[in-house]
Length: 189
Image 1 (cartoon, rainbow, N blue to C red):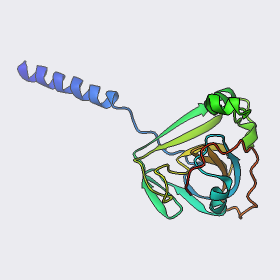
Image 2 (image 1 turned 90 degrees about the vertical axis):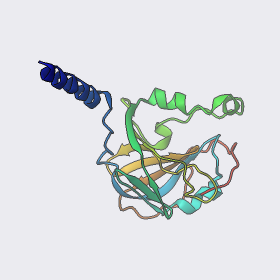
Image 3 (image 1 turned 45 degrees about the horizontal axis):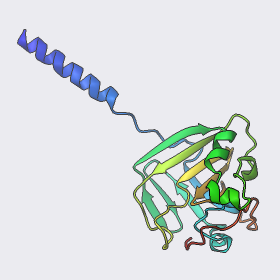
């Protein structure tokens, strides 16, 4: 009888461990693999870099895998991946730029300004990682937040800068579609 009680307790404990530890999300297939940065979409009001500092990234390649991401000569190990559906309203609120941007006349960035015309929302993929020096000037990792904009098109962001990336695309002329100023003025890229 004692043996049966011990087996039952171990079974309950194992069951609890299996269901108490959340399963790590998988990197969505539509994001995995290589991408080419085709153009600058926006340099927001709180960007850490200027448009001039971002321009050299147009034409560069980045790649995503379940355990790491690569860009600009750097490899960043990933500790996890999270995904969520972001509605246009949520995106606008989250990218309002704060009181300083509003006072300066810079409105909130919208999905439509990034060329995403979905009324239901867009899949956002965030990669978790330790701070890393990929750019040589900051521990911000460009491209660790991705919006799946459509088949063969993603929008990557870092520190208030949004860039379009496409599969197998050629370099396009860098164009800022929705520039809202350069409050950050920092170094990087």
